[in-house]
Length: 350
Image (cartoon, rainbow, N blue to C red; front, side, top):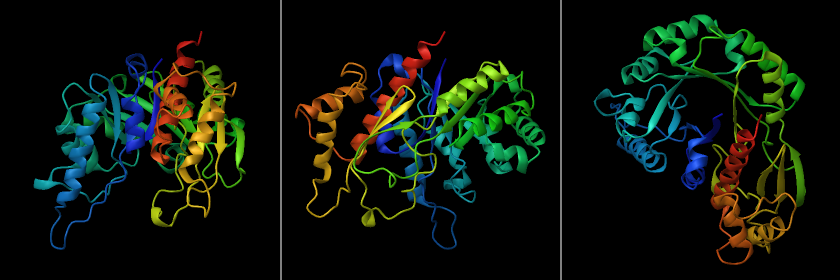
């Protein structure tokens, strides 16, 4: 069974994916959300050269990282008014600059407009539909999906669906929501595949004092309960070690004082090693990360340095063979280990 981690397309996440081994890559189909592109054309023009260059660079990075593997690309969060040189749609420019050996699928949402849907149709690639519970209440989901399928000229069996619950806090409530959404999903037995995705990592760590904590990771429980209730083959997806709507998005990094904290997935929990702010006066700053590494390798939750690239980095940092790194380094470590953990769990399901 494939694993679909929903990831932002930032360097920490990119490095986490590129450092997976062949087996892990083959079992993983990331959904990358490209939403950090600012479209700001000058007055009296709709062309922003910097915007175009960023799209091309992102496509080239994906080509280098994920050749000969499948990936889902979501550009729906880019400004709906964005257009590229010669009025080319951003998703068209992105896919045109992908290497041919990347098996990339475009993502459509119930809220995708006609301009976006027609650009996806022009790619001639079966789309993946990313649907939220709100889409079932705010839209006529059958009409929306039928309209998008008609524009793209594909049948449901050629396409995939991801039911994205977003941030979840309660197993029982989320199971009811997911079962209701799936029971109302048009063409339920006709789709090529259906995946249930959610994320429960806290939005911020202010409720956790400095020190170690175990945080319940309920998305796995939700997925198992829904799978057994509906008795359908249901793929698994999550947001790895990041909140679905990270608090730092849109904040000025110059005014932030993020903590040096480690997020380590273990079975149905995250082991959180909470540090103090990296900019605290007279604090240890990023040096806290080596302290965390030394402590983590001694804990029973640690999988061993041969488990993943991330685990090997932890061991090397603990031994002083590499520098402690920074926030981005530990995003890479946490997500790389998380993917290895989930791939291992899925491969051992009965």
